[in-house]
Length: 521
Ligand SMILES: [Zn+2]
Image (cartoon, rainbow, N blue to C red; front, side):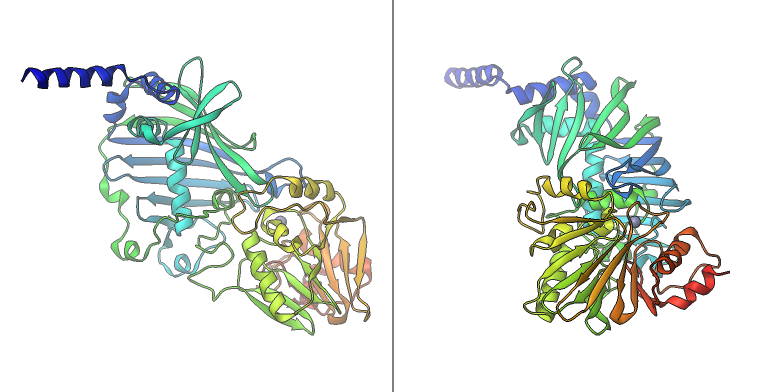
């Protein structure tokens, strides 16, 4: 008995004498500063409201220029701690790419996600079929949504860190803020208050390569003894892309569980959260402008398309079809010319594989980008990997030189490599690419409302033009002409071309005369 007591005492003594690590001290101090572990653990539900503004840097007017204001949103939401289910109801007022409002709700649970309403112009087959519109989240969207909810839930995050000390690892300071690593995040603390200040993830961006994506907490306010950051700024490589202000917050209000339910038939068929190579930045930022295609293949709708394919439009001229974004491939005597490098290097690696099979021994020598927007340029590295020259409009050269020099170690589709040997050519007005047999592809700079330095492609032997974003050939034309459509006709006239058809970076192909008739009205 006496021996047992001695053993017990020494065990207690050892436990109480064990020195917490620097990392554990930072976490413990943060938990205390926020109101203490007991109060944090007492939170069983949260109800909140707020507003948010979004900017997209890679949909700018000028390459490398000011980020595009994307949307202003109002949201209200509930979190149920017991089921770890969250619902957020959104009213999203978009300024870009066109003014419109989407009202929708997102339900996120540990093993499925659900979207009620229309949240994108790029609706997938499941959303189009459902009446009223609704769809389950793809696995990549669910994983992204779960990660961002964890990043935003400051109290739950600190508590999780305190409860899993073995997962809390050393990390380098961020500025003057001491930091720790935890579960995919780097969390930095305010040295004065001890509160968490910044939660960082190390993401991959299809234009800027390896990037830091941070939430910066601010405007701490107290609710029932718990401190909550009511202000949040999201930064991409230090530049603000989202600003959130919570206006109302309530802990432990009764929750209507039915509002967190995903219909069982949807749940049965829903994707589980993706665990590898989640393209977080693509998923997050395509939602900024309301164009996200919710699919586990970011190039095409896995529930609505057979996948990407090369569609022959004319001898030696192929359009990549089957996805949300196309390229044009022109076969020359001993090489290939590709117009546009959309989405990701995964799509580019598909294109490289498909063209190697179809045109053996003909590498991609010219990669032409119609414009710099991330959805039509995000696969540029993959297409340049065969050593080609990048062709861009006037003013975009320095932007792409910087982007290609950025570290790309987190690229899931392409091993890190240097692009300093790839020439970049800026086109001031027009540029002709020809082969030994006389076949040509010509590009012309367009005076247009979409992006500075926009290029139009022209394939003379096929009498085929190629444009992206200012005209989507295929779907019915609008009732009235607009400045984008007029710029296509103006460029054709200025260059003295006589096109039969146009192909697009979106859509398929269309007869040119139909556009002339509309614009001539
Ligand atoms: Zn664009």
